[in-house]
Length: 392
Image (cartoon, rainbow, N blue to C red):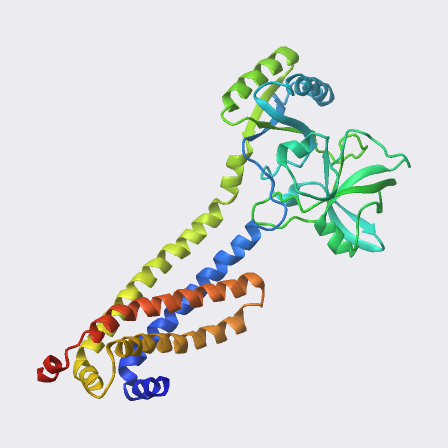
């Protein structure tokens, strides 16, 4: 049957050629669209996404830059406020860090340093945290434990948590207990996290996460982040504002509260708009191509009623005619996939997300083919040989 269909296609090049070119074009557009979607999904689900639901960032700023104020004194007062409200009914967790809160700035604007580990020079981003920040953002620990507020270990070294990306770049088979020397200080790896992403669609970089109490100076001030209970955000805002007003008194400062979950949405806006700009035209293209291919199959099948009637007369069954027409559509689509697959191998690197995009595009095209041919095939299977042979 397959050989017969190929012979039929060769004899009807003009008819089948139009549908073939249409499907080649649709497949290439689908492949392009799915590849972009797959790339963005792979970046989104890469290790290191922090849990930012119901999280807020707190900061204090001077009301007037021209008036004097003491950042150190303000930070000490803010520490007391945080300690006082930690057990409030609307608070799940509240902590202090340096540049850990995601989406507040591009990663490249955060502090980083070039360090040498195991004889290898590498760029590493530096974060500082207290023991409560794990409960705020829930980074996924692969090994070991998060930092506590203990400043030093028994051997006099500072505890540090590193990301899996640092372990992989250094080439360690195991990272726990390793020593890292940085700025004249000795650190011991006490934990490994899967990653910490500061931007939604960028991978987590190699990172050192050390205690807030390590004497590391980088010019960045402390920041505070809180996870509030569901539906308690307004109550927390009222609480923290009252505490700041009471503690700061006449200090020249203003409390600022940012919603981290909204920052995450804003961080994805450009990507969403790009995907929408690609996806909507692609959907319309697929729909119109489906209608066009369906119409051509139906028209062509209607013109071949006498041929199908003769097939029934010489022994074909209704089910056989149905499978014959559907197989025509499937083989036509398989031929249309060949140029697109060649283009894919030439343009795109072989990766899991690209191969999945290729598989998804092929699957959509096969469904496209079967549904385009199904109704014409059904109509063909219901042909009455006597009536068809009487038609002019």
